[in-house]
Length: 260
Image (spheres, rainbow, N blue to C red):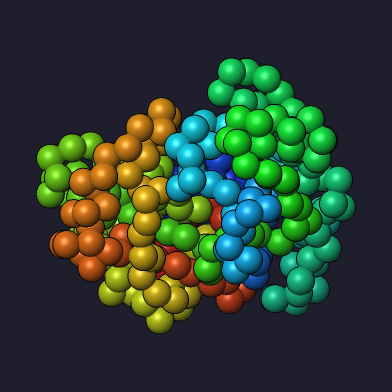
């Protein structure tokens, strides 16, 4: 197999649209990164087909910091035993309570995301009726299970715009470092089968169409609209790729990415 690059960084987002957290390793299943976007915030007055309230609606939303109460390391229990039976055996996921989340507000107040107090706080702050929605172990992604972008793509955009483009703007599960140093190289791998680390295999399904979220500074929520405008005019509105999992497994920071 040809080694194309490596995993530079891993991120998961316990609550859709809020701050993410960096991980050293994650179990990556058919539904995506375990623990990723297991909660979302629903706008009672939102579109039925897309009811989520995110930083696209109010930039301050991005400043909330969720975390798992259990310190969930995102690896199913007894994983080695399942993997020892046969390749591709689906492991038993942790119990639902292992995915319990608390959220820290920008002011430092901490809420149990399941509590009425949290729903009331969010509704009061954003002046719309909001409530947390829990999907247990299933990720509530916009489209596909995985999102990926390369550091080289971010570097190319930084050069084109003459500003530093932080990869966190794109909220990827995996930041990739390509060996060939080419920006947008991930686009050339659409439809290819890739192996990451010892076991996991994925495929890149399609380019990732971008929206207002990439204009928001991940630390402050401040907007830079010219980033999205540039990507629309220069790269047809795409940056990064969506992926799907073909063989489940643990992905670790530094794992090599090979073309199968």
